[in-house]
Length: 247
Image (cartoon, rainbow, N blue to C red):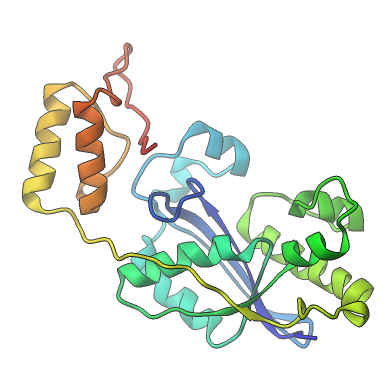
């Protein structure tokens, strides 16, 4: 079986890599089943966090103020990963965010990976749930959920437990890295004219957007302009900043 890999996990502002942003990256470098290096970093998403994300992760806006933006930390992350396959629990999710960030920076990023969720679905189909947290409880693996490095380490240990139980029985190739496929379209920064139009609409409608307008992409600015015009974004009664909603 594969025993050398990068176990990786991300915390994000949502589930859609085309619209949402990374806020934390955790990764372990594993060689012959042993952890030999760690990487952990917050990532500034350029927007305020929704309360549901704060409750889920425990990460707050003040944790991210001085964190690097993804374009600044991505080279370090990709260097850490190198040519090794990835390991994750629903690993395509983590890969899709990294692939999107790489494409935005005109960087090629293609990987093979192992997925503990796919293994669990195949061999633990009778369990009530197969979330990382549930499986850690099932195997007695200590786990602090929804923090990237802790999730990456829990996934690594889970993989070892699954391999101990099922590798000798596996005829499906789930313990061999398989190629990941995700199509990402490059986003470009918003133009000066776009940003001026958005600023004008925000002032006109007395809306305070919980996002850094200067860091928005062309598609994001267009989306916010459309939302303001269609009254999906309206000023709050108490004058507080509105969520950075992109639904």
